[in-house]
Length: 295
Image (cartoon, rainbow, N blue to C red):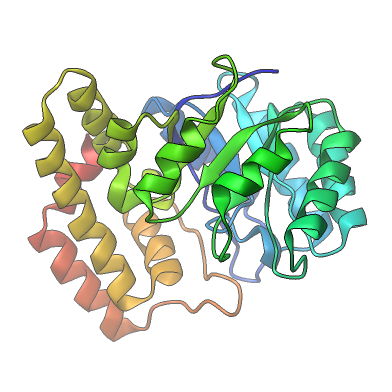
C-alpha cells in the first residue's frame, strides 16, 4: 500500500450563482495550488462540502479534480455517506477515476465501535486502494479505533482532526513498519503536528495560504522552532478572523479575494453579508494576509 505525506489542501468546492459545481473555477484553483507546491489534494471532505453535495455532484467533482491534476500529485477522495451503499459506490467511482486513496468521516449514524468497524470494513473491501479514517467530531478513543481498523489491509492510517496531541502521538506510534500515514487536520496546530511526527497536514486554510504551512514545516525540519512558531501565530490570526465571521462563508469570500469566485456555500452554511465582508477585509488587511497568501 502507498503512504502519503506533506501539505494538502482540504480542497474547496466552488459553486456557481445558481448553486451548481463550477468546474472552470475548480480547475483554476487546482492549478493555483499546484503552483504553490502542495503535495496532494483531499477532495469532498468537510471543507469541500462533500456531505452537502449530491452523489452525482460528488462524482463530477472527483472526476474533474483527477482530470486536472493528471497524476502530478496524489488525490484522496472523501467518500463518506450515511448509506453504506452510497459510500461504496463513491469509493468504486474514485478508484475507477484514478484516485490515490479514499477516506471517510466516521458518521454519527454508526453509533458504536462495532458499527464503525463494519462500515470501514465494507469500504476497505470495495476497492484495492488505501483507506484513511477521518477522525473528527466524535467522542471516540482514536487509538483503540485505529487498532481495530488495522485488521483491514487497505487501512493505512487516518486524518486526525482533533486537539489532543497526546492522542495524535499515540495514533502515530501505532504505525506498522513505516507503512502508516497520519495527517493532522488542525490548521491551528500544524507546527505541533510536525513536531509530533505526523506525516503531514490536511487543512482548510491551505487553500488560501499554503506557503505559510510549507515554511512552518521547513523551519521545523531545520530545527528553527522560533521562526516556525511566529509563522504559526500569524496563520492562526487569519484563521481566527475567518472563524469570527463564519468560517465557510469567509473561506469562500477570501478565495474570491484571491481571484476565484467560489459562490455561496451550501446550507446550512451562510455567505457573508456586506457588514461581515467589510469587517473581514479590515482585519485581513491589518494582519497582512496578502503577504501570507503570496508565500
